[in-house]
Image 1 (spheres, rainbow, N blue to C red):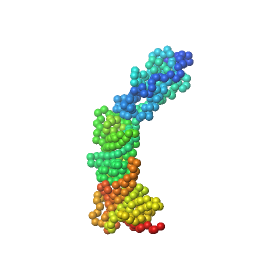
Image 2: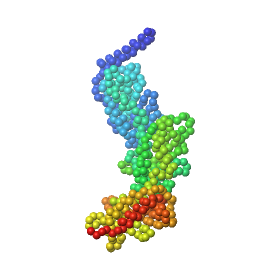
Image 3: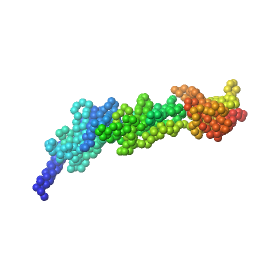
Image 4: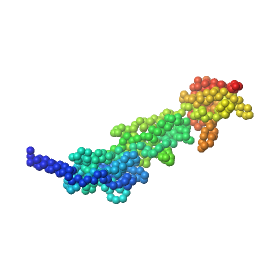
Length: 463
């Protein structure tokens, strides 16, 4: 063995023995002493330095925190992840201090430089830095440098601070608490534009034409964007590369009007979608007001693009009516033979239906009227037709009035009205109030309605 190798080996043994000596004899007992002596609310900012990685900076921004890596853009931090990190900083403790350690000796403790360091910026005072070194010869402990001091802490505390910007980032695309959509407009290319909105509690398609939206499908569709999460953050682009993420001319843009938070504050958000990302797989996107470019899953992008290309066909409601049968108080038919109106009232034996108006309305079979209501409520069209009903054919109108409770009072709604035309060959076209397209009904379904109407017109038998 060479002389230099023997000298190096001997020096290593000497350092190890010296550390073991300090661990055994010179440790000043100071169990459970806080490292930073700060409360969570006193922490203004935190920096995390990891070997070979950009510095992660977390800083207060109003009531929340923002996070950034290196010179990258700031974005909202995840409140839960931040709370946990701050709690870990406030509760970080050391068991004892090793005295008599010179700066030249730090390498022997794994502290020249430390593999991970956290710098804490208090509201008042100078920042303090704690660096984590090697584990001690005694299992379960680790060296910790605080200024010129070398401390001994639990070996597992280091894991609480080994956090990247991604770990601490709020990964929600919209980054809002309790969001609820009120309007969603999607633009794809220069000509395609579709829009769906919640108006007085009811979902309607507003572009490219007005049409009732299926409440479940519309809510589910809006929720896909409201609940969307980032799949990753875009990498640093090559220097001089023009439009690396395809966001200068986005392939698709989604504009949302919504309410958020316990006070239901009105806010707007616009998300631009660009080119495809390979790692992680997905599509590049960013909020209009935020420079951070992130990646979202391709299924979300595909769903938005499909809605635009199909003019929101998947959200259209083909139901003839929207009313709730149990709330209905009036049902009116205007037919080629005349007008028939049914009213609900409280009779001697409970709820009953009458036909006609004036001083002597005719009591009819309650079951027959309610069978008619439930059938009207369950009819679904086969297709969407033209913008207007055919001019030839028999004209019908059906109007339904409900009774609802609002602000502690009971009131009747405006009638929900549908106009229909029945052609000579039995084809039925219906136009709901507010729609710009007709519904095409099956002949069999319409025949059921006319049969139930005839049965409902029969006066009830005397008891």
